Length: 457
Image (cartoon, rainbow, N blue to C red; front, side, top):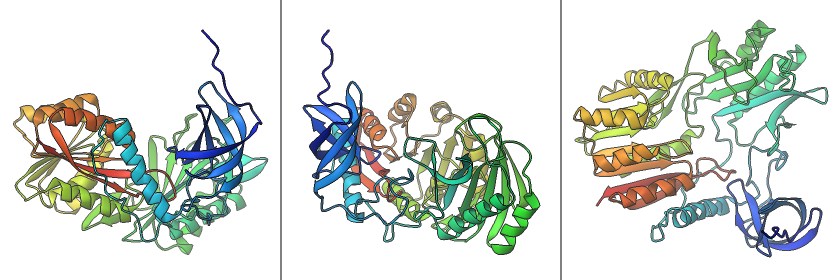
């Protein structure tokens, strides 16, 4: 077999034209059919680049100088961009970001799903696409003998120390920085992931956008949190909006942020927030959408596509803490929610109780196991709503939905690629795609959420 010929060499400088964007926001260029990924470029631009790494099928480059500039380009306002890996497309204008996200969805449907005649609506964006995140999780480490507190560089575990984040809600941005200063002043030792020593691994804070309530969580390597009382006193006296301070204990050598044990150090176990007219209790490890403003838009579309009249039986697969389920229950006859995480189901039941919603039933387990059991019990849904993780729906759940033949399926997705794969199967199983709506849940990043309405043929 002939050796694969790589037409470029490391450190070689080239003139290229960018023709695409990847999911992480890197530009794509082709050299004699060979693919190069270059951060910072945009489709349509011409540039001088330097090759920094080559592999058999693709390589990586560094942007040296643009010779032609896209009209979708703008100046990134954040001083830590692009060193910080938290954002990837601040150099794209707001209108350009929305356009690219729609194009990503259209491309995935055509390329992966073979769905070429599906109209995709313009992406629904934010009026103010900054300071939208209601949660921040900041890693803590020792770097070069100094206290490092910030976000990781792209594709590395090196922390970019920063004193603010432009996509994080201002109150919690300020609060975590105060927590950092207190920890530094009192020499609370940061975690060393190489030696598995030290105390403080992460500081997490979240805020209720509607309520203003704040929770702070210190993630530690063990039970001990030195100067705990000093931390609590300083934070709560300065920030009266803090309603909960907790400690999560993560003893493992792992990249996972949270361990299994969480204890409340001060205040309540939960804070509260609202999406639309539904109130949610949020604990330290609860999954709750980080952009409540756009979540309201996303779930509003899901509710619209469900087409409820008050007579429908609805199944919500991957229901989490009941966020979509409780929206649906306001307009459905009954909603059945299933989720694999038992703690989330407990939260969903509590949230139903808080909102005095009695027409919602929640059960812990795998959707592909629980839903067929419900079917055997005579539960025949008119509408099925799915909001799976990035890997998409389990194949057996797709088969179950096709077998159950609901009048409508509402598919909420955070990954256009796995969505396109699943839509291909659902359309082959007798469903027709009526509407595809992208929603910009994460401005300044390439992530896009979608809501799709499918109708039984």
